[in-house]
Length: 476
Image (cartoon, rainbow, N blue to C red; front, top):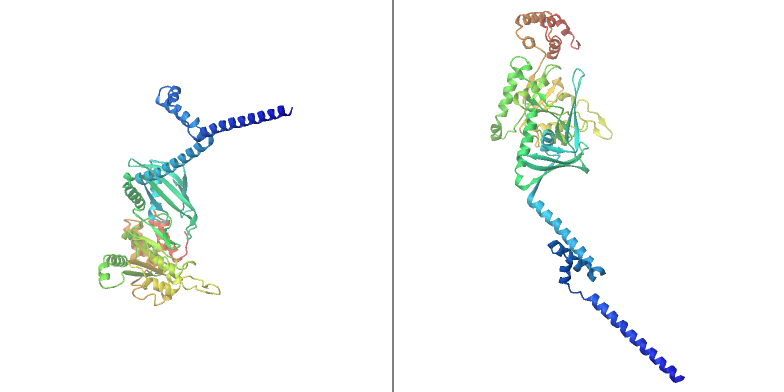
């Protein structure tokens, strides 16, 4: 019995060892099959395809990729992901290279003058496609109380497409959400034009066309500028030029001023050769309503100049800002300082802020005739009370030409009557007879104009109402 049991135990051990050897052989074959790639069976690929190139490619992809143990184990996915990432990076770099080689950009910031020119031009350009628009409202209230409103639709922030001279251009108007213009509180904006590199010369043509359109809108008109922070900005719509003959001053005064200004404008070399600052100041003084400001407006129209009005009593105006504004006057502009006597007669001391007026008298003098004063500048000052002006302001170099614009003389009365009622010589003689009879010596040209405008088509009615000129505050 013992011998038989020992024999069975040995047979069991031998059988277990054979089974273990068989398992190891199977595992070894599996590992070898997983670690070494199977050869590509080209005959199988050919049999599984339909004979076309597309079928061959599909069958080959299935055999190499899908049925491959590498991809089944995850290694193929890693390789495929790497290939896709490299492909994406190549596409990005390739597109960037193509963009740099084939396209060109033009950026127009909102601080540049051509910015508004371009927006105005694009708002009227027909060959454009816009889905983002902004409205600009032009609101004008006339003297009679009537209101005129005009809406203009301009391209708003976003992308627009235009076709200019056969070339397509992408217009992108962007508004900054972080940067603000501290003077106006509006965000900075940029307009970017993108087109093919070969069409880059069209940028100059487009901007030149926009400039011509903007200047054409102002042709025959006078632009009034006012200070806005550290810069000059147009105030309202351009005014129609006023004819110099429409403002009737006393005999010879108008011609004298016009001739002096024109002589100054052609004497730049004469000033520079002698080392004299090339600027000239004019002071027009006289009672209210005598036509001082009206004459300056007519003079600007005669010279084809614009007018820059500067209010010295403005609370936020400082000496530095005054100097900056006077040194950055728009080209072909007259600087107008109205009621110069009232700029400093209300200066009061404050405990916290010094003087309530931001501009000091010395600051004004330095801006007019200091080291940092502007060149090629024509300055007109007006006042109703010349006796209140400091002698330092009237010094030559600051005021070079002074002229009295007084109440209407007999010459002015007759000329104004004939201008309103052309050809009425006999009625003008009758009007002058009544004028002398009533001894109207302190009548302003503004009063005469009010009378003639009220009776614009009835000269005889104006003669009958001449007695109203005795009251300077009469309202018709």
